[in-house]
Structure formats: C-alpha cells, structure tokens
Amino acid sequence: MSEAEAPAAVPSDPSVAPRPIAPRHVAIIMDGNGRWAASRGLPRAEGHRRGVEALRRTVRAAGELGIGFITIFSFSSENWSRPVSEIRDLMGLLKRFIRHDLADLHKSNVRVRIIGDREGLDRDIKSLLDEAEELTIGNDGLTLVVAFNYGARQEIARAAKHLAAEVAAGRLTLDAVTPEAISARLDAPDLPDPDLVIRTSGEQRLSNFLLWQSAYSELVFLPIFWPDFDRAALEEAIAEYRRRERRFGGLIARTGS
Image 1: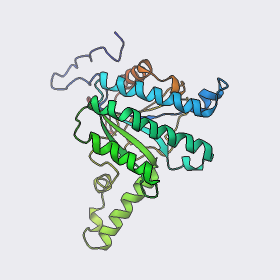
Image 2: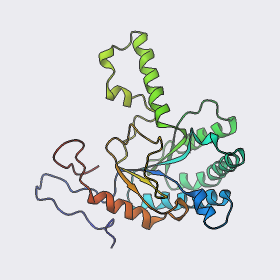
Image 3: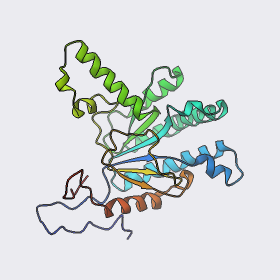
C-alpha cells in the first residue's frame, strides 16, 4: 500500500478528525509538453497530444482516489502569444478532447466546469465549452474544472470591476468590499479553494494560475514533464501534501481540507 493510500493516523485528540486520504480539490499546472517532445526529437504537437493522454489518466486516477475537484490549466490568456501553428494545434486538441472524451466523462458522472474569459473566443470553441458544461451539469461525481483563456490577475480584475460598478451604482458601500465579496465575484465562486496545487516540469511558480484561490494551498513541484504524469505521480504529490501541516496563518495545524 502506498503512503497516499494508507489510512490517516488517529490524532491524539479524539475530537479532531484525521486528514482525508486525498485532498478535496487538486489544481494542476500541466507543464512540459514541449520540452518532453524536444527531448525525444519529436514535434511540439506530439508533446501536446501525449499531454492529453496524461490528462485522461489523471482524471481517471482522481476519481479512483476520491478527489472531488480537479482544476487544470489548459490554456492561459498569455498563451495567445505563442506561434499561430502551435495555437492551432492546441485548439485542435481541445476540440478533439471535447468531441471524443465528453461522452466518456458524462458516462463516468464527471461534471465539467469552465473558468476564464469567454469574450472574443471563436464561436466554435465557445460552443464546445458551453456544450461540455450543459451536458454534464447534472453529474455529481468528480468535477473537472478547465481553466481556458484564463489568467488569475485578469479574473481578479473582473471581480474588482464588478464590485466597482456596484459601488458606483449605490448597491454596495465601500465597507462591503471585503475578501469575501471579491471571492463571490470570481469565475466559479461556489468551488472550494484548492488544497493542493501541482506543477510538473520542475518549474516552481504559479504563472498567473488561481492566485486568489491558492493563498493557502500546498504547492508541490514535480520534476517530470506533464506527458509522463500518471497515477503514481499523483499519489506522490498527495503523499507530500499529507506530510504537511496546514495552519492557514494560525499556530495550530488544521486537519481536513
């Protein structure tokens, strides 16, 4: 039995519940597709294709491990600066993933949610994103959150803009502009904050991903490229998460997620 699967130790205080085997919400920065391909003398498009395969493995493993929510950084608002050919390949992969995998996700009771700015997207891309959400809206198993055309600073700016408009219209006072008010105006305010953020490829930064929501998340950086990510890598990250004490700014660690 791996450490990620081992039952949590019973705390000395019986009133304190043990930490769950898996975190409730895991967010992943899927990094390293291009470098994975380059290290093998393959085109970047092949790295992205293999990255989709890794995503399929990860969604399956997350459901098996009891994770409730998984958020993936699929396409950032900054990715539009990449070469046109690579953007075309990425959009093609997104279309194929939704067209080919959506039925399986729906059958597996996975709910798909989309965060990010949909304004200005091509009609066919926007329609696919809408279709994924609408088809799976009634599912109550794992929730797969896809961050597409997403940037955390842009998300926070949108929330601030909404608050400023409400204050200007007299619907809110300045005193009502609180962290809770900002959270309520983010792209998916009903989702729990991530307990664990994983980034592959060895890079150690958040790259404008869930900056507000990750204020107290545990960060785990893995040296492997995303196409090599599998259940064992997910379990390794969860095992590291479970070794840490989450204090949320206090002196006493909180159990649970």
